[in-house]
Length: 332
Ligand SMILES: Cc1cc2nc3c(=O)[nH]c(=O)nc-3n(C[C@H](O)[C@H](O)[C@H](O)COP(=O)(O)OP(=O)(O)OC[C@H]3O[C@@H](n4cnc5c(N)ncnc54)[C@H](O)[C@@H]3O)c2cc1C
Image 1 (cartoon, helix red, strand yellow):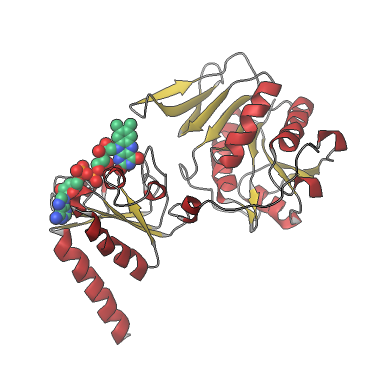
Image 2: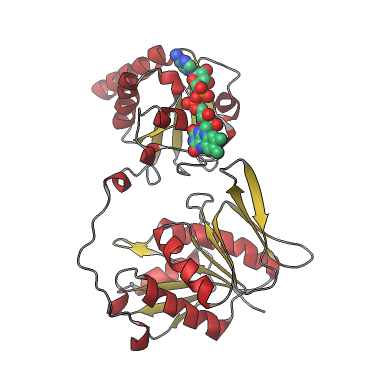
């Protein structure tokens, strides 16, 4: 039977979170199909313990392709490696993150192996009678959810929205196989070289990585009041998020936006201040561990789905929370 594959991603600090999220997705699909789950990891110098982390998080096989020429993610060499592995092992499904890496590499691979690709999926399942992959993603500006199938071509390929599911807990007793594959010189692309890597300003806002996110919406009334959010986020060592209303009004920049057309996040604590909880906003916080709503309207959607709600005027509640935190810190 043909396996389910995921493309793991590495960064300066080893494997990225998306690799483990993809393993959780892949594991569920592989179990439904009764096949193995494999992770493909390509890079310049992966520690061998990293391959075993992939196994502990759900992989049965890890294909490792390591070469100094693969230190930076570059479209042609990476794609050629994946194309070669696909032709050699014939997976039925290949998932990658809807990240810069996945969005760059997978379209190229899809063309080369004559298959389709569904970008930015938020849900994946197996169709009961056919075994086809059901690839669900927001469509028509996020107004509908579309489910797409690739019945006639293999592998079925999809990129998956980061933070749209939680990784499985590591199980160190799991066993698996690590397979090293060689990088062939012919796969290199000597037409360009990486001279420098710069991180764009917006990418430094990391609400996706933060354990605590304090988000504000239209209830803040005006830009000058956003400082109330920033102060609370700072006190809690968190990041500031925003609803689309707040971003459209220019109170916060787009990298802070949470929701369907913004970022999907999974913080340990999400505090939504003056945010009603429209479905498009809730789509970005489905995997948050604990949600607190601060709203004057007890009927607001976010209040209904929150673990805790503070009903009242945010202009009284936020300064009071700040005062109490500072007081407790002084006395402890
Ligand atoms: C295709 C599409 C994609 C979208 N993508 C996103 C997205 O990614 N993210 C997103 O957020 N939205 C998105 N939206 C917009 C979404 O539908 C809502 O319009 C938006 O989330 C509402 O923002 P809000 O909650 O800040 O404002 P509102 O809905 O106006 O809510 C303001 C809240 O503040 C409360 N409030 C007012 N004054 C106070 C006060 N003094 N104290 C306490 N509470 C107070 C009110 O009770 C209310 O609940 C999208 C819409 C579409 C059509």
